[in-house]
Image (cartoon, rainbow, N blue to C red; front, side):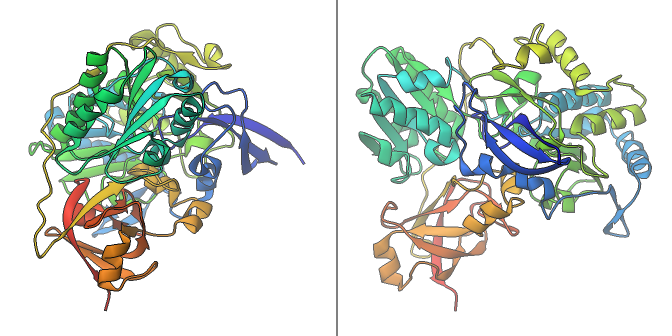
Length: 526
């Protein structure tokens, strides 16, 4: 029996935790701590601990697919690539939208940027491109802070960041949390400021009065509310007015890398562009995408893949060599633990094959060759090599925080028909977007949290005769879904929370329409 460990980076959030993947006789069997990491000190959250299970996820794709007579049909790589490149060549550059998941590697994203240039498209974007770019110092430094303001629910979205906040509090730091409900992060706080939809910026400004001391941080997480850029701008203004550090944490594991590599065109602007007729989507769950032609390369049969004209099967993180850049801009190595599943290829390799079919040879034979180009062409990565990253990675120096202007948060208008204010929340078991795709392909995570639920206040539950586990219909003026009730003292009266994820083809967006908040009606299923 041959047994070895291979170190890698967690594919879920942007903390960038390292862990070891245990390989026995060539097969991945478990994961274990990587104690040397300066980011997470050998600790992982449940998502990272069970991430290796996605290698054999039940939704994995093992063969290219082409839509024939309305149905996706297995075909050879040669046929799929020939068809994809033939069709893509029919569109002008501005007619093509290109989306890079922030859960893929720097090498994958850089190769896709090269492909966007080959196709002549400036519509190169990522879900990370929401107008927020800020990293102050290192994650480890947070534990030594005198004072911390947290905007959002870091304990569930970025658990190992919340651990640093807890470490700081244990050492005497004052912690203030702004969130939409009494979340696990809020329960860490000395001061909790509850933000209702539309009041998030005001709540963030209120937190300023609790900032004291010279070594203070304003930490911006996710799921703080709609109009994320405006809320982040309010948090940045507080930090600048007080002369303290501002740190924003992308939702996706390599969201920071995606911005560095060049996927910074605002995603909302690209999605709203009605002149786009074809899409090339790498590793991202975007729901149903309807266009003249859609190419998806992914490891899993997402909803987006189900709507594609061509599906190209990709390797998962444990089958890939590469790098990722975490929230603090630490560039770290992913080491390949096992060969890509039969029929699949690394994302960067697929992109190179597509480029070749379009007449341009990217001349990449290994991921290291892609990284050499990154080091030669991307600011901050100058001169980096795989060898230089082997120990603790490389921490790129912070630059001035940047937050783009965006629409102000809007209040949620309730009515007799829709009397409850619903807000999305992260969960400890699942991630956002394509990270939700990852977690639902990890059986242990699914076992712990098998489906969508709706958290409501005990008084609202009593009024409606609902108990834990009761099946209810959650309806808005957009749509409806069915979920199980969780009765929670942490949720205020006439409000509710729901996980920001997709499980078993049920997604909160069915009622929110893509927003993080909306007004709903909750009724027991007859």
